[in-house]
Image (cartoon, rainbow, N blue to C red; front, side, top):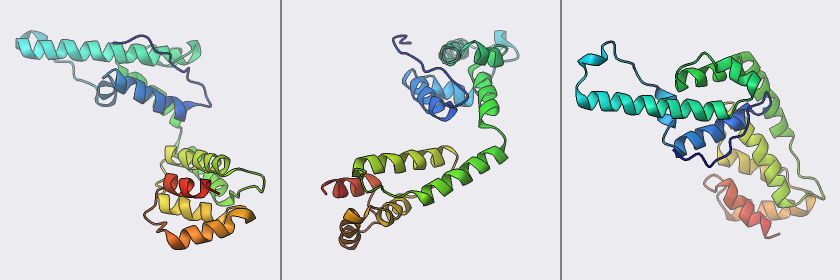
Length: 194
């Protein structure tokens, strides 16, 4: 395991981003699968053959490495929540249950984000890149809360909400390209020329 990385500390406000970063970090250390799926402790370790004992030892080591990485991402208060967890999967689930919150909270937040998405309008003084960044931020937050949002929907929203200087460009772009199959990044590239 490579210990030359820094781990962002989990806060009440950054759980979604923290989760994404931790999954990537754990994946890079070949430890995400053990967090996601866990492993079973045998009832009678003595009955295992040598290959099974080796696999169990490897799973235990991966699990403890993953648990250590999770611990690195927690301050003292957050650590207290998972201190009793002896396995990485258990610690991850405690944090998930603690932060994901009740479905009602998620639904309310998603409704708020949907409203923000619909209300987005490019400002007259805003650059295309800045506007795309704002749109992407809201879309990514919606996805973090489970919204399945297609590029075509995002593209249509962007084209409908361009500032007056770019609306004609957006209309001609819509007519010359199929916004149903174009990715949002491709749309941004074609608009950034203006």
